[in-house]
Length: 195
Image 1: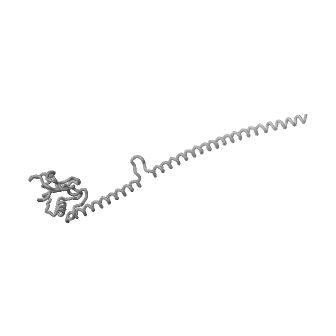
Image 2 (image 1 turned 120 degrees about the horizontal axis):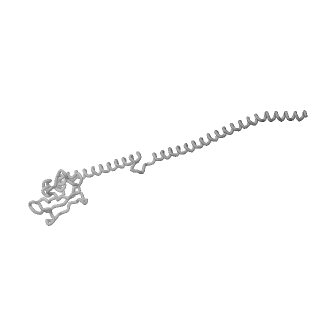
């Protein structure tokens, strides 16, 4: 019986000591499970933040690309404006060169140079097709006004070419309504042939 009591005592001791140990193991296991749950929540939150950071990084990259590309909605970049400004400068220089050439040709005309042999060359007009004046139909020429022309320069050029004396007043008399201060480029005027 002593043996039985001894075994009963050992069994009771094991149950008594095992009960709190099992309870401690269960509490420890519960704490471990809670910590594992919290760790998993932190890992999930970190993954979500990583996705948000990737999305923000992509948005920043897209905005940066849009800033470097010219906009399609009637907007121009600084480079486009600089190129356009250079083209305008080139055109202005070409226009100035053309104006200088015209002035030189007109100076030649004014100094008795020949009338240019372009499409603006004077053509003889017969009496039947002439412009009538107060004294009746005249013979003469048609001339197309060019940039920076003046009546006196035209008269001098025709005087030198035809070897006759022609005045600006004679051109005005042959072209009623012509304003010598406002000659319209491209308009044809009648140059009378002096008698």
